[in-house]
Image 1 (cartoon, rainbow, N blue to C red):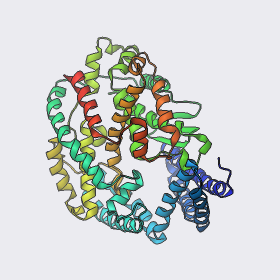
Image 2 (cartoon, rainbow, N blue to C red):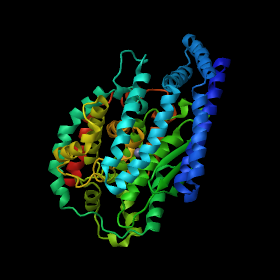
Image 3 (tube, rainbow, N blue to C red):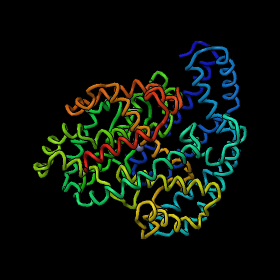
Image 4 (cartoon, rainbow, N blue to C red):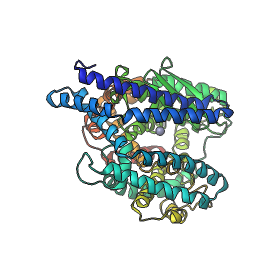
Length: 503
Ligand code: ZN
């Protein structure tokens, strides 16, 4: 903690806001896991009121004064923690204050309405009923981006999309992401063309997979990953997620389906997020120094565990016998056959069900479309048609309905434009960070093959988790891997794995 009164004062205010935000997180977790259905209206009202209180505190002029005083102290000192705190608080404060309260309120109201219209439109496969709400939301979010973008800290005038992206992935711009997409997409499309026919001849693992046994097996896996149940728990929910209430209270949720073991990978994914949250420094709880740096880095943690570790040979060298003990009908299954089954490459319509390779194509499509939407180059009314065209071009499939096309994801319905690229960036970061772990931890994979997963967790904790938002994603990447984000590492990883697993 800090000695200087100005820094202490700012920290105290920030922690108070942080505690209320984590309370909001807890209300949200409860709503998805425990709350009886009839509780919805009271919960919505409680969340609405508390959100308003938090917003008022986060935009209070007193906070601005405290921040200015702390910044004055930082200018003369060399305390990196203090500088990082001021930088991050300034970012949030400016973002929140630049948006006129009436606009913020109108966005919140429209987003909540649009989200319920989207749910109904998706259920009825009726894009037209959702269209006017999406159009309105887009106009409002553009206005918000213009307000935030004026007097942009990094100089120059950012595009509206840059401002939106910056909310989730600070420091990245649309042009940078587009550059990465342009480098990766062509070889990804080739990879799919090459491996999809091979995968089509590989059957998925046949069930049934008793749900209680899946739960038991999954628990053993995440225990070995080092997920700490003294500081975390696992419950059921319709959509699996990880909620970091604090580094000492991290909630995972899972959903099981007895026809497949895919829920295991989802659980490992959420546990990867959970390890990040548990690895944050609780001494700084409530401040940006104990908060994830970006969604891309968060996603790199979940995807590394899910795809690189848990779909890899070392992992299954250890876990296949245990899987077979739980599910005796897999007794005759060899390691090679299992790896082929869990690494199939198959174009499909739904992003959240996509494999490790085609997943990126789903995300790129959304990124390119939302970028054009925000720039006004594509009209909302034309979305369903363009979606189908691009699905045909990129994945060779045309969704028969909008339900399986443009209406499938929730993000746009609450105005989260600029969110999708973080999934793709997460995959790139994951490959590069894991490659660095392999260099720095000799015997890493021999250890994994012996069921020792915690050395990787420890390494990630020391290099990434404990720093919170002290460094930008770009700086963190350079510190941990010795280089800036390089999609070539992702390419070698993916091509290498598919060659060894699928031939
Ligand atoms: Zn995730």
